[in-house]
Image 1 (cartoon, rainbow, N blue to C red):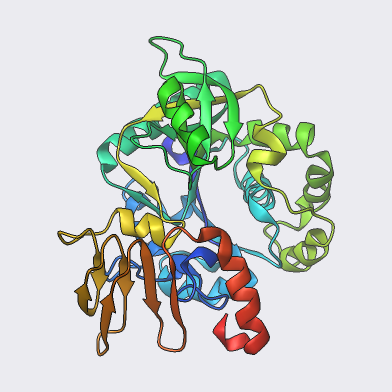
Image 2: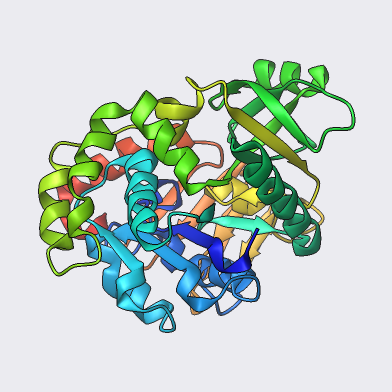
Length: 358
């Protein structure tokens, strides 16, 4: 495989509602420095790949509202490599947009799809898994996802069941499972043939194009009709029209759950998806009572809490367990740390008071 044929697509158009009130519609989590490193999640993702891909091989897919944010945070990426979706249409549309654009740029391309909200703790082992997936995608022509061996029954992640073929680095996928309840997650862990779905994918670009034609033909038809507009000054105009016909569906539901051509490479590189405050709490430094505190706090009879307050504010907490306290200046959120399912309701009700809170 020629290195000049490799492309990296970073998906950076999500809303990040489970990090509200810090993550807002105008500036979602991927554009925030949630870890206090001085780099946003998007910048950390770019940093991970910048020594493995040439500048022209980067494609960033984002929403029209975030074009300026991407341009400001990734100044080395040319504007033509920032693909702008006119409206939210989930991961299938984002990946289709990137795939059909790349197909026009390089029909021989091999593509790595990466979310912009992950932590990778051992990048050496991560890229060893990516190399195995690239080799498998080139030789087998299959759709390959990167799975991570789970170390706990987590209900925030999707799971992949695989056929345990011994000695094969690329294993055939049996089933995909969305975020399970705790009992089912425990069963997955005990079975030994489930891994976490990292949302990181590798394939020949022509392979995913064929999969769109087979499993999402309506979406494929829209993008095929617009092929003549890619890389021209009419591309943006075409996308506005195209996205009015495209349905909202994830790549998992639209293709992976239907295809028998999906494989997985198992990784052990240390990984987490920063999808919620609870995920951030799990990877944060904690005190002897398992509290993670960002800011100034006085804690009494309090344990297993995540507390994030502005630098000039002191918070005093007594008698809480398993709670989130998140103060973003204009919104103070106090709720159970695992209340992920409630965020849409919180945001909807806050919007009724004033749009600026969301």
